[in-house]
Length: 133
Image (cartoon, helix red, strand yellow):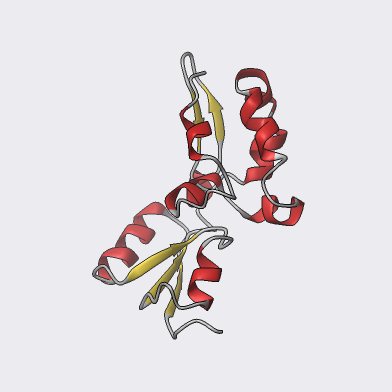
């Protein structure tokens, strides 16, 4: 099956993403990696009027270590978590768990933030994101 028709909007900043979502008046979905959303679109489980692609927002891809926390950006890919020295040092179980998320092609596209948003349990165990540093 193919998705219902929708308007496709590509944004390159959080400000533009918020504006596009606001203009859609609740009828939009956010496209990040698409590993969870695209199958739902194809089966018409979700039928947004607008699809807002946020993949070009550089500020949302990061893994940062501060004095008392590890911060992971919403667009950080599963593979980046798997390979990160910061994650390996402070949250090794998270990095190790990423090796069990699908296969490499999916880990290169899928993001932990999006998987958590869609409650896509096979993609990531959301409880891993709550581990203390």
